[in-house]
Image (tube, rainbow, N blue to C red; front, side, top):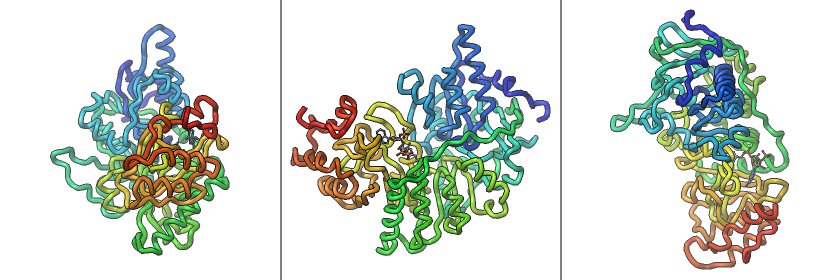
Length: 495
Ligand code: 0RQ
């Protein structure tokens, strides 16, 4: 392995124009950093010399700025899947310069194995340890690691000694058999293990080892405000009432909570609600709030795909591994988000909508139906298979000029069939067992901002026809209003 040690620039030379590259990690956690930066520099040099250079980028989810951001700014991303949240990459995607396929995160690894995306030429991964036998211990994010390592012709490892050797044992690495030979994935409770604490590869495939000490790139959280706090409290109240009503077992059920500011606030409120027993987390991204609740004894165990926590929190975990190691488990996304496991465990899922319609359909991805925000991420993996699926959203965005509730969603990610409950700062719309007409009444009365209730009531009055009563000429009046007049309050159904 010593002979394979080299600089990031030397390792980047293994990547050629047109390659499909699989990257390890999940969110900025566990993503390689110095080699993607060197690939971006190489792309810029190639472009200056008048030569093309761009690659297909396959990841577990979003990445850090030194991966998606650097490569996007170097115009080096030809194709991207399955999720991103970087503003420079988003610009390329929305201008059509980068082809982006938005996918349920649980399906990418198997789709790669099925051959749907061609070969993976190189896997570039971050590791805490690599042994001469080809055992690779990941760092704080797993994603599609085992699959890209197995499929890739060559593997480049960023060996990052910021992650202590004792992290070995925090991962559960496995890959399912593919159809027609697939068997059940035998996870019956969040702490069950089905694999090994490392990825095993053919050591000859490892062509480069680049030593680094780089910390993960950090995202930022907006501090809690009254709206996110109220949403969190409403979610906690709803789940507490469900428990009292006996519709959630008294032992409680594992929680999945999505990404972003609202999700972090929701988890905080769940932890603070004394009526909710200590619970487990079976999720994709383990955020700061989960670690906080673990310290308070409110979260017993968390299974996820990445420790997507701030730099100070990861240091705290590493300094207290005795406390955290038997409470945290990191798995490939194919397991953390697996529909079979989510349904078996009875996961209560809480995700955030960009917009919802009055009948309970959810748009999580497209601003005004056209511009990609991030992607569907794991929200579909969890929602569709949940014991109880909840969507949260502030009732308005952009200082009230956008209503989160519209007559018809401008893009559909989660259909009415999968969405059980919607919660805003105003209240709770429990949609279980309601017909579309009753759903509309429930959503307008409980969740919509009071400014927009008259407009949505007016829309509902326009037509009485059909199971789902729409006026197809007027259903996008809110979207026309924001696009043309900059404010949904000015929606005119007759124009
Ligand atoms: O804009 O960033 O300019 O302030 O969207 O909105 O309210 O801060 O919410 O950070 O939770 O993100 C759906 C994008 C919400 C995210 C989404 C604007 C708003 C703000 C962000 P600014 P908030 P969040 C996996 C879980 C899909 C993937 C998923 C997401 C910005 O949660 O990507 O669920 N979800 N993964 O102003 C225009 C609207 C808008 C709008 C909000 N209708 N139109 N802009 N914004 N609504 C499962 C796991 O286990 C992790």
